[in-house]
Structure formats: structure tokens, C-alpha cells
Amino acid sequence: MATYQDIKGLRVKYLSADPSTLGGGDVWYNSTTGTLKGVVSFAAWSSGSSLTQKRYGGGGAGTQTSALAFAGANPGAPAVQTEEYNGSGWSTGGDLNTGRYLIGGSGTQTAALASGGDSLPGSSNATEEYDGSTWTTTGALNTTRKQCSGQFGIQTAAVLAGGYADGDSAVVEEYDGSSWTSVTSLPAAQNNAAGFGILTAGIYATGTQSPNTAVLAYDGTNWTAVTSANTGGSGRSGAGTSTAGIIMGASTPSISGKTEEYDGSTWTETADLGTSRYNAMGANTGTTTASLVGGGATGSEVATTATEEFNKSINTVTAAAWAAGGTMGTARYGQGQFGPQTAAIRAAGSTGPATVNSESYDGSSWTEGPNVNTARGLLAAAGNGTQTAGLIFGGTTSIAPHNPGITNASEEYNGSSWTSGNNLNYSARNLGGLGTQTSAVAAGGLGPPTYLATSDEYDGTNWTAGTSLPAGLQDNQGMTGASQTTGLLAGGEGPPGAAYSATLEYDGTNWTAGGSLLSAVYKNAGCGTQTAALSFGGQPGPHTAQTEGYDGTVWSTRPSMATARSALGGSGTQTAGLAAGGQPPIMATTEEFTGETSAAAASTLTTS
Image (tube, rainbow, N blue to C red; front, side):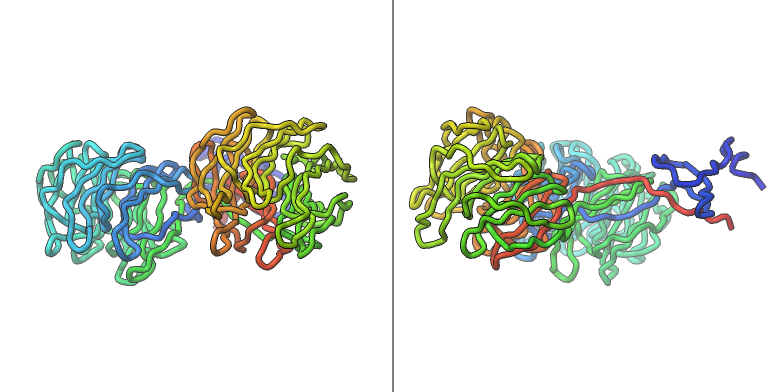
């Protein structure tokens, strides 16, 4: 019998503890635990950030880190919306010209192709191309049809096989970048199969044909039956190549999360989806080691926003998520908050009346700290990245009608005590703040009844008038930034009580429009930097738990908080954020945000 040394040319390492750094193929014996250990690859689905809207029967394109989802239904009027995935979340793309669902989709995020579908009340022959921002109508299909999920290829060389056109169809058409041409038909009419690959090497798997485990391969001219899948079903999603493909989900007719991999000759069952579904949108140029599925139907015309990522590697992927943190000693809203997730300060705020109370957070629990000098709520703070050098300013000392106690008071914190500093040049509540104790910005707010566009800059000693906002704005707590010259303001409320989705970026001199939030919001919280920020919570209408991430250009979805809240405190970074307090009712709870992580994991090997 061959030994490990015979096979690999290496002896098994004899160690008293698992190594701190792991690599694929590593094998060792842990003498402390008496186990043979190794690093092997494994397959798993993990949760990704949700789509912005529920839908099924849409088209998909791209890869796991650069994908598209477009069209679909919820049910009701077919959608025209497009969403783009960047590996962390979904953001808004350009709308289709023709709304439809049960559509064909293929290509990449910047060169996608959409064809056919159901535009209600009838099927469509429309074809559109996407350039990364805009859909353009191009040559129509020769055969009008829906149930077009069996589309594969790229924008300039695609195949649409089968579908439903007053019955199951065997028609196959090829697209050359401008027009469709009818080519060799399927051996039997069918629809709603999974398609993946390229025009000269494509796979059409498990449609409605009986037996619906059947799989066909296309070489650019002819269709050939190949090894059947292990589990039948229609409405599957597919990705990859003709020698390294993957299919997932199905209606069998029960709804399934089954996933299978194809190596060009054999289908192998692998990890199931966390959410069973069919007619989902996926990254159709994904791979058997990195793929993506979003949306789909979890019941008859019951759509979902759920997104999942498939990975096969030595790494365990832990999805981004909010988790419960320690409970504050004093419930409050409208407070000042600064510092990282494991070393934060919460100061003042409203508990009903305004409070002087402050608390510090160590990453697990809150501890009472020294009181501020002026009791106030609806204030702002700055102190990016530090617990021992913070700044609070503005707010109101009274919650009586018309807020007669609006203040311009400013205080500094050194880690042990609060000291009154020079006052702001203007008095306001519900204002925004960003930066550090020696390089801070205050912007907007309410000086009843006026929505203020005013801004001030602080140098550690004095406040100086800064560049005004383009318009008056309050409840803009979604301000964040590392310094006075790299600021970000997301959302807010402007007259007459309208929620904004606008983002403003500050360079120390000018406010410039950035990418808009996916949803208009005010009384939200923010953390991070101008190029890596989070916005979470807020209103209008119902209080929200929604979270969005910003990359310096666009906002995209992130996992929502467990508890909807507004007027909350926010601090930390985009991958390690902290949300505390808020309303309604007045809260003491804390949530911690952790971005997606990936780390190699060791497995115990059996010797039998």
C-alpha cells in the first residue's frame, strides 16, 4: 500500500498544534489531539446581500463578483429594472425598454443580452443589449416565445433554445450581435431548461421534456444527448462551461435547492441552496468554484430577494451580517457617537428629556463614563477611529414644542473627561457631523423653522464657516468621513419634509453630488469613509432596518439590521460597524455589523 510519502514525496508533519497559516493540500498530525489533519476544498452556498426587489423569471448575466439581474415579476406587471452585483451587494442599473419575465439572459455585466419572455398579456420577441448602463433594442427573435431560460453564450454569439410559443418549442436561434438566425432544432420540444456555455460548446439541461433529467450538448451545429442529471426539474439556473458547469434550484414539481456540477461527462450532486427556488437569476458566466443566484420563486408566484454565493475552495466563507451586541445602560436616541466597533463612545441624547449620560463600548458591553457638560439630544459627533479624542456639538437641551433649547455648544472628550470648547458659529439640532476631533465638519440641521444649508469646520480650537450645502437639510445623521477633506453625506430631510436619496461628497472646499442611495431616507446613521461607507436605519414612514454600502461611486444592498430604528447612533467602518439606540420606542439595544470574511479551515482526516 502506497504511503503519503510515496505519493507526495513528503513526510506527514508531526505538530503539537495546528499551524497558524493554512494552504491547500497541507497535511499534518496533531499530537495534542491525536488526529490527522488536512486542508481540503469543499463546496458551500453562503448568503449574499438581497436584491432590492422581489422577482422571479428574470434574466441573469456575469460572474459572482460582477453580475446582473434584470426583468422578472413579483407577480404583476413584468419588471424593467436591472440590478448589478459587485460581490458585496446589489445596486441599480439601467431599465430595460420592454418589461417582461420568463426571459432569456446571457453575457457579462457590461455586455449582456436579453431576449424573449412574457410581457403580459402575451409573449415577446424583443431583444435588448446592455452596455453596463443602458439597454438598446436590437434584432427581434424570429419566433416569439417565453420560458427562455435555455439561453447561453455572449452578447455577440448567443443561442436561444426551446421555450414556449403556444406550446413547448423545439426552435433554436443563434444571435450574431445584430440578428437572430434559425438553426438546428432541439430533438424534442421543451422549455424552461438551464443553459450555459458558449455558442460552439453549450449545455441545455433538464427542461420540461420527459424524462426531464435529460441533458443536451450543442457544438454550434448539432445537438447530442449526454449524461443525464441526477435530479430532474424545470426552472433551473445554470452557469459555467460545457466541461465545468453547475445547475441549481428547480421545480420538480416540488421546489428544490438541489445543486449539481458537470465535468463534461458526469453530474455530481453538491451542496444544496439555503433557499429552495426556481426561475432564479444567476451569474451565467460563473464557475463551478464561484457562482451566484438571486431572486426566484419559492412558491407559486411567490418571489424572493434572497441571494446566495456558491464557492468551492479551502476557505470557509462567513456572510456579512448584523449581530446583537451589548445593551446600553441608558436607552436613548439622537445621541452623539464616535469610535470603532470595539472602542466606541455614546454621549448625551434624548431619553424623553435630554441627558448628560455617556457610555463607552469595548466590543461586548457598555460601561458608564463621565457626563457631558450640557444635556442635549439630536446632536452630532466627530471622532473617526478613536475612543479617546471625540467631539460633540449642536443639538437641543429641550424637547418642548419648537425646541427652545437649540444650542451651538461644543465639547471635546479625551478618554476620561469632557471639556467645553469654542462654540459653533450657528445653533442647530438634527445636524450632521464627520471627521476627527481636530478636523471636523458640521453641516445642515434645523434652526426652526428653517432647514439650514450652513456648514462649519473645526480645527481643534475654533469653528470657521465652511462651504454651504446646495440646499437646506436636516436629519442628515448619515454623515461619515475620515477627515475634514473626505466627507460624505447620505440622505436627509429637506423642505417640505421630503426624504432625500442624494449623496454629497465633501473635499474640504466643495460639496459634489455622488451616487444616490437606493432608497430615500432620513434619521439614518452612517459609518466608514467616503469610499467605503455604510448607511443604516432611518425613515420615512415606517422605520427601516435597511443597510446600504458605498464604494465611492454607487450604493448597493447589504444585510439589514435585526431591528428597524431611526435617530440611532452609528460609528466604525464599512466592515465593522456599530449601531446603537434609536426609536421607536426609545432603545438601548446595540447591533454590530461584520463584513464577509473568508478563511482556510482544517479538516480531520480519517485513516480507515
